[in-house]
Length: 364
Image (cartoon, rainbow, N blue to C red; front, side):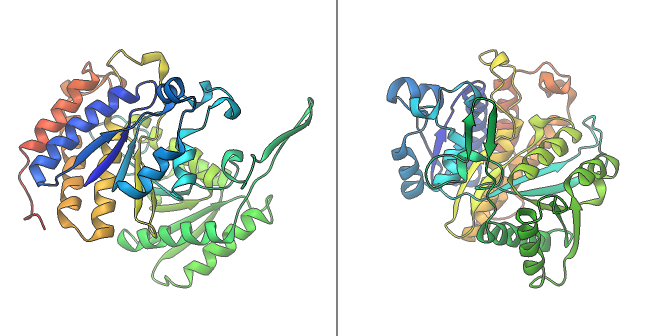
């Protein structure tokens, strides 16, 4: 199995190195035969190729690889698009049509948090919405008619809404059979109205699932007040982005949140940490690699479920379990969690725990 690796910017190379150490140990322990091939992206690609993400990289990811592990990007510091500053994350989501951004958030009793009992997954549509760099066939959906006026176009499609809602319901069936749709249809009558229409339509195919609908601002308050009450949350791009960061921070740290971008129809999947590139601590070896490690674990589980390969599922679950085992020891936590452990050491701790983990089932 071949995985494309793109360290990208800021702390990306550091957390990627720690993640790959865990993945290599996991591959050996579960006999996965993983092969990692690195591609340039971000500022390195800009320097060497004049653009932060080359189209040939996307072509190779689409046709030659089983999955992608994407590091963090400093796209706010990139030059304009016409000068090669392409948003790498958006490039993968649009270029590979990775419409489902799956973002779990759960609290751990041994990590200080603000949301006891929370265990939810936000299913975020990732290819349209309020993001102007991904909602037009040509150009972007943002413009300035004059220097004193800026306009932005939001795109919500029936196809985009139906497929993210369907993935949300499918996930709900695997969990607690409960789902919440997030919207602002009281203001965005047509766009959020269309999203809600699709949610209700898909719901007819899943009568076992309990459905709720929340206005986004009210749900943000409810997420703080009673986070344990929710299970699967489905939302358009912008709402899902904000709410998933809120949920992850409530769980103890944005650095604890895994994330994948996937397309169930094509079988393509990209693991990506939820957080940014943290350029202020880049190169200091103090970043927390947990988010990217868990994202890679999620990708293994997702690929295993899609392909019916149990040992991939077992491997991903083993990584998640060993991450918790390591985090349970205060002496092995990174600085953002009150510890003193460096980024590379944390990766070694998790890799060592995976390498010695008892196998719960025979590999398929």
